[in-house]
Image 1 (cartoon, rainbow, N blue to C red):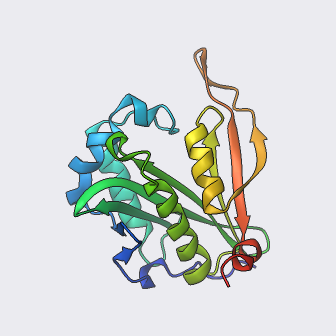
Image 2 (image 1 turned 135 degrees about the vertical axis):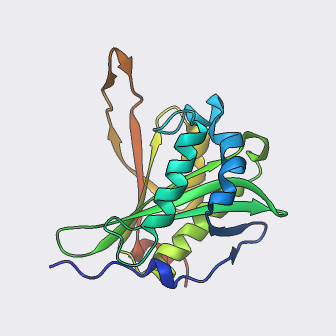
Image 3 (image 1 turned 90 degrees about the horizontal axis):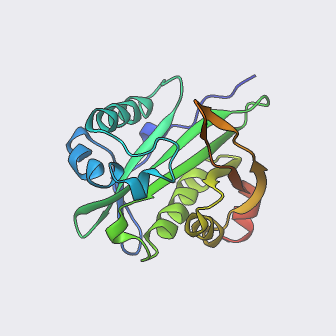
Length: 195
C-alpha cells in the first residue's frame, strides 16, 4: 500500500540559506538557466548534456507541473539566487518504494562563474532539510559521474555517503557513458547529526 505523496505544494517559499535564496522555478527563469545549462562545462556532468532553449523551457514546465498537488511523478524544481541573480538550479524527484515509504533523488547545477564558493554544498544541505525536516522522507540519494570529483566532495560535505558504483555502459551508437557513483543518506543518519 502506497502512502500519499509528500505535500510539495505546502512548502513555504522562498527559503534562505546563509548566502542563498531558493525558490520555485518559473518560466521567467529560462534565460538565466539557459546561460549556464547550455555550456559544455556544465552539461558534460549532467545526464542531459548542454541544453537548448527548447529543452530548458520543457524542463522548467515539467518541474512546475510536477510540483502541483496530485502530480503522478512529484518533483520539486528550484532556482538558486545570490544577491538577486540566478546562479543555479536544483531538483528533488520523489518516488515511493514497495513499502509505501518516500525517498528523493536530488540534483543540482551551479553556473561556472559561481562554482568553487561552496554554493552547491549550501544548496544540498538545504535540500536535505526540506526532504527530512519538512517532507519526512526516508532516504535521499544523488548520482554523480565518477570523474566529477568536485560534486562528490559537495555530497560528502553535505552528509551523504557513497553507497554504490554503477557501470553505465553506452548511450548507443558507439557513444560511451560515464559510470556513476550513488550517494545516499537516511533520515536516521541525518537526524543523528542535526539534533
